[in-house]
Image 1 (cartoon, rainbow, N blue to C red):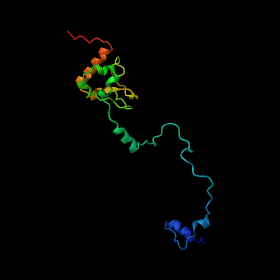
Image 2 (cartoon, one colour):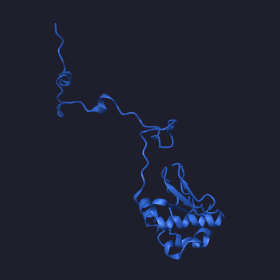
Image 3 (cartoon, one colour):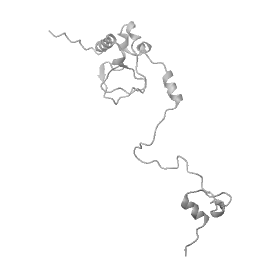
Image 4 (cartoon, rainbow, N blue to C red):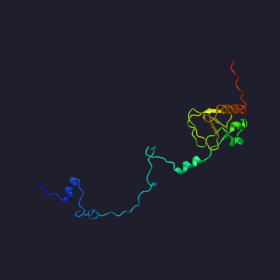
Length: 167
């Protein structure tokens, strides 16, 4: 003899929802368990070791606005701090922008460190970052005349002799 199916079994097999007038409330079937422990916080969970591609760092809009509002330093603003800039004509100083702190240097681009005239211009490896208080000039940001004047000023301070022209 075939077993008779209940209304609930029939509804599961058909995928229809039960009638709220005839269905049994869930509290009667399975009473709720009391919650004794509070939910785990962010600091309670262990962080997996290694890098995770799932995590993202987002910069708040306030922080990005704060970075953009800082005026960019020019060579004219720091002329009293560097011997190299004292050797450069005043007319060129206004056209020489300095890199901001924390700016990563682009790989294989030329830069000039005003704190180290003996180093003069150098080519970046791509891993360097402008440190606080460091003043660097990017070759791409200045004119050819200003760049050659900065290099000549570094040579004069480091007491390097200019190269003789080829005969």
